[in-house]
Every structure is written in C-alpha cells, then in structure tokens.
Image (cartoon, rainbow, N blue to C red; front, side):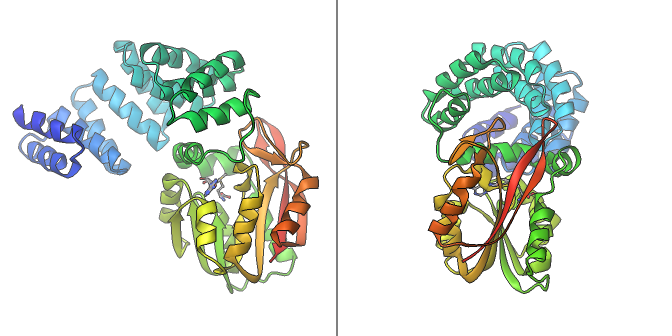
Length: 390
Ligand SMILES: C[S@@+](CC[C@H](N)C(=O)[O-])C[C@H]1O[C@@H](n2cnc3c(N)ncnc32)[C@H](O)[C@@H]1O
C-alpha cells in the first residue's frame, strides 16, 4: 500500500503530524489495517500518549494473532506502561519466533529486571548484546549482572557502555557501585529520570504496599510535633514530588503547594492525582537557585539519597527559602563519611557529617528523628528525618 509506505517514511523522518494524518486517512478507509494500527500506536507512544497507543497496538495483534512484530510492539509498549508481567509474556513469544530481534531481547531482559528477576534477565540480555553490542544493551546487561551478583561480567559490560559518551556518566555510576570507579557526587540525572519513568506506574503500589514506605507521613508528623500548624498557611515546595505521596502529606500545611521532579512519568501521575498548584519538570539543583526566597517550607521525602554531596542542595534550599523558612528532608544513614553509595544505588550519609553541612549552609536545627524509612530486600532502611530553619 503506497500510502502506508509514504506514512511510515514520514514517520521514520520524524514528521509525526504528517505521518499521523496519513495513518488516520488509511484507517478511515481500512479500519482493520493492522500495520497502520500498529504504526499509529507506535507514534502515539512516541508522543507519550500511552493510553491511546495501547488499544491501537492491541487491535493490530488481535487482527494478526501470533504476529511477532505486533507481539514485540505491544510488549515494548506494555513494559513502558509498567504492565511488566504481560510484557514479558509477549516479548517471550516475539523473541521465540524472532531470536535475532535484539531490541525485543533487551526489552525482555529489562522487563524481567523490573520484576526483580535479574537472573532470568541475563540470557536475553546476553543475546541482545551479542547481536547488537550497543551501549544501551551493555548498560542493561551490566545492571542485571550486578543485581544477579555476577560482578565481573557487570563490570565488563559497564566498561563497554562507558565507551559511548552518551552513556559514560550512567556507566560510571554503575562502576562506582561495583567498586570499580570513584563514587560520583550524585546519581546521574538521566539515570534517576529513566529509573522513575519506568517505575512510575508501579511506584505507589510497590512502595506503600510491598516496601512499607512511610517517609512522607513521618516527615509531616515531625513537622506537626515541632509546632508547625496544619493551617494551610505556607508556600510549600515538594522536591522530588514523585507521584504525589509526599504532597498529600504536606498539603495540610500548604496555602500553595508546588512540586518538582526530574521524571515526566512521575509528574504525570502527580498531575492525574491532583493536589498541586504547580508542577515543574526540573532538577532540584537547577530549580532552587532560580527561585530565591519563594517558599516557607521546602521538603524532600526520599530524594536527597540520590545525591552524595549535599552542600549544593542545602545551599540551594536556603536560597529558595524565605528568612525563617523551614527545610524538611529525609536521608538514608550509613557509616562511611561523608557518604557512600549503597546496594540499592542510593547514597547513604554518615550522621556525624550531616550537622556540619547544614550549619555551613546556614540552616539551624529544629528537630530530628531516626526512623525506618522503608524496607529493602526484607531489611529495614535506617534513616534520619531533619527539620531545619533558615
Ligand atoms: C523515591 S521517590 C520519592 C517521591 C516522593 N517524594 C514520595 O515521597 O513519594 C524520589 C523522587 O525524587 C526524584 N528526584 C531524585 N533526584 C532528583 C533531583 N535531583 N531533582 C528532582 N527530582 C529528583 C525522582 O525522580 C523521584 O520521583
């Protein structure tokens, strides 16, 4: 069909509006044309419109059951929306029929990793790397190997990924976690964004259900006990707001509640849940200095553990606070001073170093509490909640 060829050429060239118009025209004439349905679904996925994309690709697969191209397409899409179990089934079917499909093998491995099945992810990821040894596949293999305890292979794959400048920072971060490179000052923004984009659909159920996450309520409780009134009188900024769990805990203090996060998919969930007066897609280290003396309360629940060096973040929080304003945040505790990268690829901070850093930033202690923030692999994650006044 020449129209379909034209449309997919426009699509491949990046002209999404023109391609979309042609797909829609084709489907008006042939509503059951599976390739047009699949390609329009792919286009919607590229636009971030997942809820439009899934039914289109599902229909393509229903019209051609068992077609590996549609299984692969729907599998990749479902993996992105967090429906990992169904994604794994489809990607297994697709790669059984097309064992040379390196991208689907990588998608399958990453979905298995997302389900906590790192060992099962090794075989498809090793095959993906063999077929197409690009940095994305090497990095995915490195992550799976690290989680599965295959450290020498993880290191080799991360070193291979690090040769690509676009992946060097993320690969370096992983090498640091493997003890094969110096620990960087922070988790790479791209790593945090990808991690939480992928996690967004399952985040709340996993954290509050499986992992017993309680930091937002604990932080709000400490604010209350310190005498901060729940009278909706403060301009509040929820740093790393995620899907909005922390915003819901902070809302009783807020006249105006703003949230910011690196991850567009987490922000989408926060937007859908409502409750924020404004949401910003930004790195906290960029946003805070650009908004001087704007907030009465700046809070970060389970966020500063993606930073190692805290001096920049603390100084930036001070800058964004009005005089007398309050910084409220949690940290994961560890022994190594001033910080070390933990097993979960989050930073742990040594209690002895924290007070000095806060004082140097111009923050005076108001209250602090040691507490369990959540569980990780069945073990409690020890943390510290801190309230400080500018
Ligand atoms: C574990 S979640 C916590 C979300 C929320 N605060 C809660 O308590 O449910 C951490 C969030 O912080 C965000 N984050 C981490 N580092 C960040 C940074 N430097 N700037 C902005 N957001 C960041 C992540 O994208 C993620 O959504």
